[in-house]
Amino acid sequence: MANQTNNHGLNRPAEGTTDWHIPLNENFEKLDADVEIRDTAANMGNYTPKQGAKFFATDTREVYLGDGSQWVPSHVLPNVVVSDTVPDSVPPNSFVFLTSDGGGTLSNVVEDFERTDPLAPYSGDVSAFAVDSNTTFNGTQALTASGGSSRNVISRTDVTVSAGNRYAARFYSGSSTTDVDCGLMLFMQSATGAANASGYKFAFTDAPSSNAHRLRIEEFTDGSLTVHESVNVDIPDDSWFVGYVDVPSAGEVTYTVVDVASGTTVGELSHDAFDRDYNSGGVGWFAWDGLYGDYLTLE
Image (cartoon, rainbow, N blue to C red; front, side):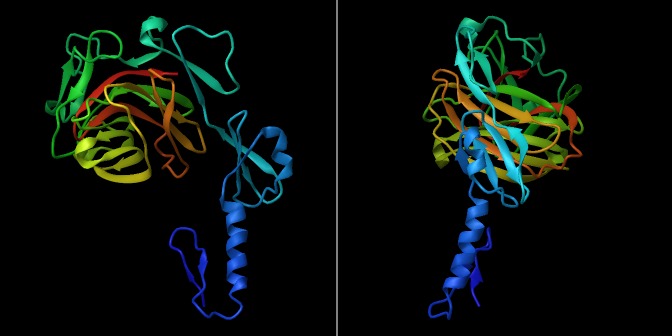
């Protein structure tokens, strides 16, 4: 009898197995359904919508799932256009990010830290955070945190966010010798610190000391942290990045991080197994090591 791989249940017939081609061909059937198909939307009809198969339309960035008989629309992976001026036109399912130099005042601001006491509305591990006026994305103040040896979270529920929207937060990567391990917290169920936090975390890590350069989608449940998705990425030093979080009312949540200077997407994650009881809540910020965070906006 063939052993199976842990993640996808692919058959691994032992050496000398009789009719070894049978479990091998079963693998090909599974792979044909499990591996994402990428092609233009016009060519979708060339592929069989097997149960659980995924089709990504490269021109429109729409995602479809097979139900065994047809391709069913699921969600859209947004495309980010970075510009210092408003473009005349943009590709389908795209949105425009205007840089601070050419875009003027940012709109739909959820949090900008431009207050006399920016930390006053927050509860939790407030002593681990501070306000910085030297490294800012826009305006005169940004959130910062020094390196530490534990998880730190600040959150507020007087400002709420909800599913069916796209949010964007700004992070700074720091120098080649500075560790940054931080994140945006959304749908916080109470204004609290890391020990009792419940909500979703979208992590940005650039830590040269441990050679950790990654993005993650994670979930806090009463202080317990679960990593749902993780990807290693190349993060340039001393640069600002925008983390776009697209949270539809149902379906996959996507997290896309863009280098502001170059307009390059450095990484993209999606996850479809969130506890959908968290469809609204407060906002917060996470830091393990250093953090420079600024301007959370509704896109």
